[in-house]
Length: 389
Image (cartoon, rainbow, N blue to C red):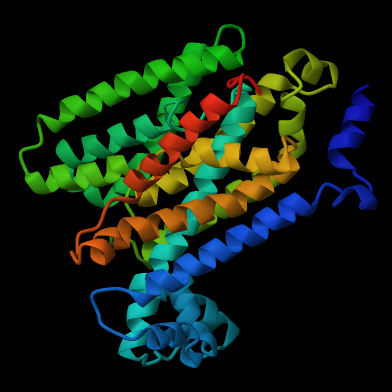
């Protein structure tokens, strides 16, 4: 039996490698790409700096950006690392003078879309993994305490250790990881179970949220309160290339690991006894997969704060389209998560400007909550059984 399991999980034949790609999955991915592209074009077309829509779209295709590798690598790697890489290769690192429109589009408007894409993919992957680990479709980084732990770390940094605010992304990630470690410790009783993990997550999340509320009473500076609210509700306002560089490697790592471990995720859905009988070390696999989910959630929280409902709703939407096979589900989440996040951020940024002519912006997390909450209520009313996978 063990040899059969090893063959199934590590040595698929060439014909089996892509036989799970079907029409619904391809349609979902293509539709999601179109949503992201539409959101990108809308985002770059509006802003404080006035330019025409053709001028904004032409700035995206500016030849000075695409034909000079030092420009793109400066965006993706930062100036210091770009000079080290291109200097090693003997390629010119001379600074390129870009037009004002190109600078505005590439340095202010496009990074916001790229961060939305990374945050959406990371949260969707994290939610999908947590739902398989707990075998509960109500699980998400928020339910399992990861988001609350990160939020508490952010508030502690802003209110108590304000001198360390430059390390906010790092503390957010550490807070999320420590919170889930606490959840795992509470749920451990000679092993864990999906029910104990979810219950422990609810307890830790509730306690940490209460501590967050208590910390607000100690914040005397209204600026600190507003910054803390932006982090705890999830916002993409003011993000730039440093946030892209922060989230990109960890999100890519989480996506690759999730894809590589999708067969293990499928086996976990069969139940602990079946997975053990197939030779899977259940507890070790569950812990490894949880680590991948924490990395993904932390990458998102570190740059955008706590964005609600994406990690919960996106796996549900994808599951209704492509089914429960985690090979299709993970790929679908990688595309659908960015689509939801990019579209939500367009609404958050432009709703007041377009409807009321006012420059105020909503936090993206408010829009995802307003969209995700009613959708989840719809699911509850539609499905007779909502809970166990």
